[in-house]
Amino acid sequence: MSLQEGVSQGFGADRIALRPLAPEIGVEIQGLDLWRQLHPATFKQVLDAFNDHCVILIRGNSLTEAGQVMFARNFGPLASAINRNSGQSETHSSSFLISNVRENGRLIGALPDGEMLFHSDQCYVERPCMAALLYGIEIPSHGGDTIFANMYRAYETLPEDLARAIEGLKAWNVFEYNEEGGYGQSAMELYPEMPCGAKCFAHPIVRTHPATGRKALYVNRGMTLCIDGMERSRSDALLLRLFDHQEQAQFQYIHHWRVGDLIMWDNRCTLHARTDFPATERRILRRVTVLGEIPA
Image (cartoon, rainbow, N blue to C red):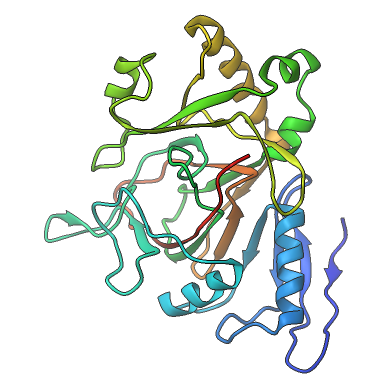
């Protein structure tokens, strides 16, 4: 896809351009100023890009927390951050820091370091977030990349037997991290008795996007524990096939962060993961979350 220029519509609208980030997912929006409220015509272009490409990148803005919150509110009501023992904003309940930096011996943010498995945010609650916006404040010299994967394309390319095997089924998704951002073990020990002691919820394995009408895979290696009502060995085998399929490189975009990057992803039709980075280097990003709907 070639560079596409958005059409300026009326006084105050920005003239934006779209640059694809990867063949199957992601677009950079160029020419967008985030220091002021968006013109309705400009926002329509941004929303169309978001719905069409699942991930949008906006670079070159010096963005305050208030500015990030203002931009996020264009997409709907904001969600309060959950399961965050550190990094929570005192000003905006939807905003928190992701960081490995410590002050006075305590982390200033959540999810400090190490790599993270592919996952969908808040898939373990009844009403997961619709989208998340992550802004780069301090970036390490290498590593700490974010990998996004298109779950529309993962579903659309499923082998026929696998698509039939999961039709109409739900899977249990579990959250259990410790304070340092690592995975806990009790959820696995409790399996298969559900609901478990950790935060968990069962959602459709295939969900329909409320805005686009497209179907997307809605399981992930990081948080999906088992298929509801299915014998464990068969559940494990089906989920492993789904995980291996949905994490193929052909569906991915790997984002190498720069200071001032704002990435927004559609949590309903993407997965994301993080690569490791040097624990001796600082990494600070600010996240704001948009409230979603019950998956169907």
